[in-house]
Length: 427
Image (cartoon, rainbow, N blue to C red; front, side):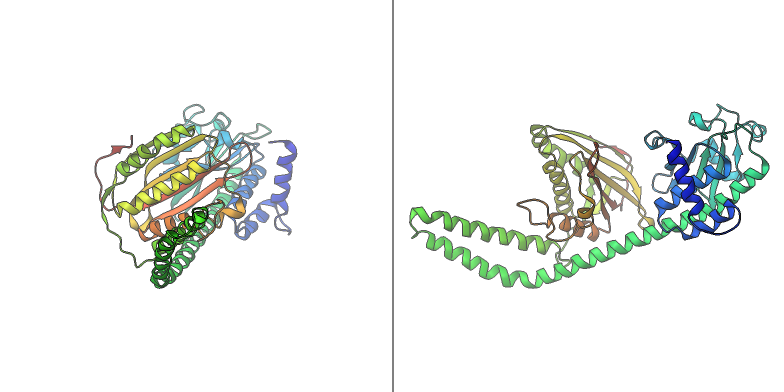
């Protein structure tokens, strides 16, 4: 990061809330006022850099699903380099912070008497003689802050550490609130989307028979009349029949959104299901120049699900990725164990393609019925997938990047488990 950019971020941190008093007081007053998690993490990293006069800061947050501490924000460090940094619960540093709840000074001034010396811990080079502080709320270690030594190479004082712990405590509380707020907004968005699809499904179920009966009559009549139409006009007959079939397909798609249609739940091996779908599509992917990779190790491969509908979702998602890469690319499918709050164990299916990505304005509408960017699409595919996954008490989300050299689209499906078996490999 350039010196100019560092100074700019520090200036933003200083001026976020006007007022008198020390920078620390301003920072503590500013924390509760920052609503967005991304902005909050940026501010916290810049604040620690300013308070401690350090050139590098790395902020880790606990990921409940994996149980690991993931680098979520950095200051003065290349984000791509820092993204590979992770800690799990068994890491000696994490265990020490969880038990002691205080900062760990690795400069040799405060921390060597507890048994840790530079080089003892699997830390990045910049942190081997830095300062490490826990982010704790209600006795729960939700994250940690790792810094480099000071710019001046002077040791950290007891006052520095006390200030750091105070700011870290307030920051942990603000981050926890931002995470909860984000989860609530996501759940509300899912509920609204599900309600919209349910309303459309109910409308479709009521109107389907009223539309399909006369449509079938029209199709039969056109086929009958087609026998008496001159050969040169047969194209018109074929067009009417084709469009009638297309309307019928749209009606079937709308009926798939209806909650009234029954699901046949069985004990389904999701690993075998995914492997079967990939085997089916592999020749088509190879022919299109798309490199397929799949991996996964599940301790809970069995779920209660409608196999036909889950297969429909997988085919739709993978075919969307296939169509997004007409010039070739790569497709990755990963299975992993997950957790779904009160629903307990779950499986997570992640499908990532290297297509052109989805522009941000379109990303918010991909699950809306009849929204499509395809010339021949009906815009019901992802809406149907959303409805199916929701009815299985699961979750589906899409992340995408449409700018820069590395464009991609990732679809993540999470389905709750009802049974478990020994771990199985996805081949």
